[in-house]
Length: 94
Image (cartoon, one colour):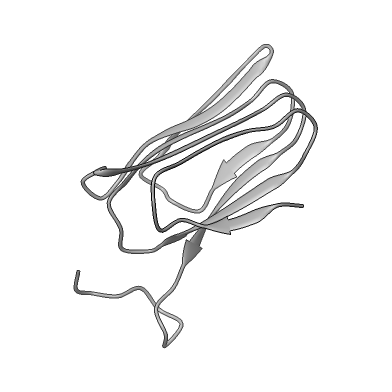
């Protein structure tokens, strides 16, 4: 399963592969995750999840949304994880 830590704008397209992406808990990233038939989930409560026939989507902004992450799959799942700070908790400063 491919896995990335986001530190620059990314656009990833796959057919039948599960994808995991990690974003810092305190970040500024615009997110669009989509799968035709696979599960799409996010650890960020601020993102909107929509399930429709032949389309599962999670989208929105984490922070100001100045960076950009876009992942699209046909039947693979997409998971967006929250990377915690060094002490295992969210950072309180940017």
